[in-house]
Length: 242
Image (cartoon, rainbow, N blue to C red; front, top):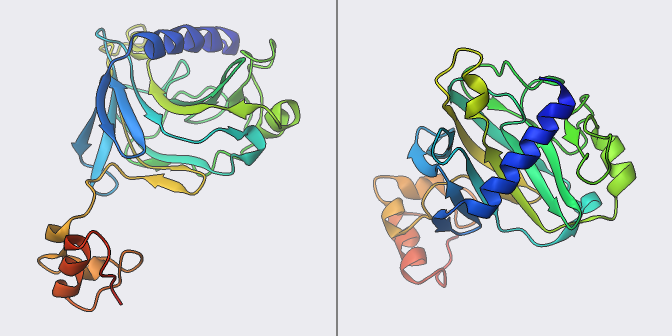
């Protein structure tokens, strides 16, 4: 599939997902929609499983971010694991919402974004990544579906980003290549500027038991013992650790 068609397909499916997708789960900092759920087997802990199949055909995470300019987006990264079929046809990807359309940031090997390696992989920081065609800005500027970070920054430095999603929606594309039409991807440790999303439950006083208090090496913590840890969570954070 050529790059222009890839961008067109991604645009159509993304618009559909954001219009028709229903909220599967709300949590602090993000909302899952479409065929998305929290599962075990993260890197480590839990992960968000995003699946594209016949129904509904997409899965995604909508992150609760404050409006910022493109130049103010300094970190965009995730760990990912293709567990069924392959990446391709513009999926998986980050999408940055603006008033004029989406900026797509593709995940996988440039410039085709097919042939993702098995097992857990990391994108590294995609901000500053100048791989060919990593950025697709054709919704904002026709003819720029094969862009780089530097090219995107030059065109859209002051453009306001109003939302950020991580999307999987190209299971249909895998039928032609002998797949079963299901594209399933686990994502973990999503980084957007100073925030990291791990999809693990928020710690409670029970997290302090069986030596768990020792794992809090930074805020909250460190704690001097289990009782100190339990006191912190039982007091709603008022009794701080050492």
